[in-house]
Amino acid sequence: MSYDDIRKLSIYEDAFEEHPEEIKTFEIKETITETKIAFHHFMNNKFELAEMKLVKFSDKTIYHSMGLSSILFIKAMMTCTRKDLEVALESCKKTLLVIEKFRPSNGSFNLLSWVSNKQRSLSDEEIHAELCYAEILMLKGILTFFVDESLTSFIKGALKINSCHTIFRNCYKIINTEGWKDRDQMIREQFEAGARAGIGMFNLIISIMPPKICKLLEFCGFYGNKAFGMGELLKASEMTKTLRQPLVCLYLLSWNLIGTFVLENGNTDIDLCEKLLSPLIQDYPDGAIVLFLKGRYYLIRGDIDNAIHFYNRSIKVQNNFKQFHHICYWELLFAFAYLRQWSRAAHNTKILMDESKWSKCVYTYLMAILINAEKSVTKKDDTVNILLKKVPKLRLRIAGKSIPVEKFCEKKAIRYLRTGSLLLAHYEFLYFWHAFNILSSNCKLITLILEDITNVSGKVVENDEVDVDDRCLYYFLFGVCNRLLKNYNEAEDALNYILSRESQLTDHTYLAPNATYELALLKNSTGNIELSKELLKKALIYHGYLLETRLHLKIHNMESKIN
Image (cartoon, rainbow, N blue to C red; front, top):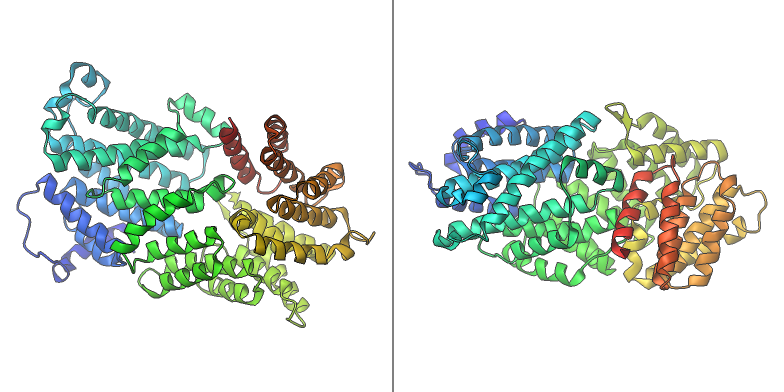
């Protein structure tokens, strides 16, 4: 559905309206309440109703327009399909035009205003217009990166985000100024929650960027303080009567349950997640998004069976947003893989192959390695061979660039077609999708995986015909498992074995930098902080290997954590 199609749906809204009478005047407090009701519908799986409730006045009020774009943004982030990203981007562009009409005129909200205290004369509508303008500008900047990954797009996005940062800082200042408490309480609370969430989100995002991007962002004029950002987001999450509070809770949960594993080494605040989830489950007991996050929470806790239960519940409670089912199937395939139930993992992969448009290349490679991992399946070689022959042909290029994980799958498929080897490929993929860190809270599962890996040692360690790439992959996975089980001597010996043979690696060149990073984690765990820092710097020297950006992000955030 295009952006204009969503706008046209307004003619049908009367059939869904709880309050069908026309709003004659647009009081800011009324529009906030209307938008809050729409967000409530969205969280309760009534996705179309939420959009219809907002679209009717989305060209007339700040909050109806901001609410619609925010919902479309969330949907786009959940699906990451180009169509949804473009719809959300177009909505953000039109929302900025709507809000522009309500913004203070003649630059009365710039830095000079704070010196002369002119902000006191700004109306409630004007200050909320500035806040919403900054929020949508940030969403537009993020969407710009996703839709077009070129350097020009990055610079445009960075400039948009720089502009919104200036506005957020001004909004943040106003909540601490004299005379602020003279305004209406609801107006103040709604504005304060947005200002804290905005400045907090901004600081968190900037702080986790890799060094090269950070330098460019600093050149553009902005910096990120992670501790400050998290603190402000937490304050906003405690403002329970505000429009943005549930969304801030979702941001914090997404960061802790997903972001920390993608960008860090799984530095999750489990107690905070439990605190945030409890009221969300109470308010939205059948909300697909909340149930998904509950499943992820149990996954991180190492309770895989409960995770599977909540992922399945998330699928069953709604059928309007099929793309969200695909996210659940993706999580389910990994959950079953953690339990070493390869056939059930492959079953969920098959659903994604048939229904999802995200990456046929990745799904096909996954199907092949999962079938190969299942010992009970006979005559699987032909099936695996057919699937892996397809992988290179399915790799996509967007704006002339490859998707890194697809490039990884292609290289692994080509290696198989050349050597016939898929040694431990299933556990290798799990590692690069953060599985071992996720399972670190469940020593029993890590031990079972280590047993699987050790079972092939006879084929690898004692067989001179096994090439150095496969042998190093064995030692790498053996080392990772032992590090997580705190068998540090065994882990260190295995990882050093890889580094002693890195010059001989031809296909698995990514093992050397990742082994160096794993050694840095090991040394940090044993208290040798200085050596850990040196190893992180050494890991950054490597270049030109598969999934390089992923490792750089982890190294950057590990360095920040140590420092």
